[in-house]
Length: 212
Image (tube, rainbow, N blue to C red; front, side, top):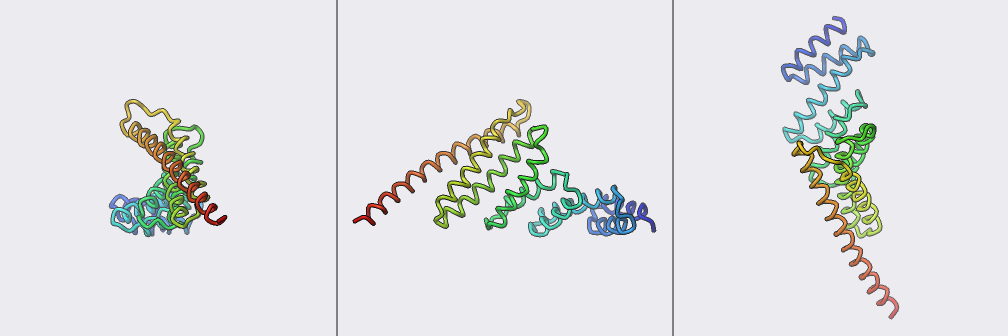
């Protein structure tokens, strides 16, 4: 068979939600013609679709693997980075690797939407703030207060950018996201100031004790 025939078979399988089969057929098309743009694009969509299905079935690890393949095939599609950032953000195990997944992918999402700056650009900053804030907590638990301050400030900076966006009055989702970003910003600022006071007080007590 030629590349077009493999593409047609892949399209038929994709329309039946047979993502495994579609991926196999699109891959064969690209083996014959590595420059077959349509097959490459469809393969990225098939990986993305299978990744979403894996996520919905509770397999975040496989979902990330598939959507990362989709992003490799089509690195200019912000959809993939937004999905990866979201999945990493939903993982309950807040390891540094998972948190970096949030920050790295939403940074790519932001960069792809930096011109013109619309809703996606500002929502990307709001989402990335979650990664910075979670990383600040890791440092706080480890007793590294300076790093905690650094990453909390990064989160605050992202949220300050996010609230620059003027939501569409007719779009309830945009309005809710804007309001949520404002609340998170005020909460983070308040928490940072409170922890700074506690930290400074504990340092003073420690210094006084050491000087006795």
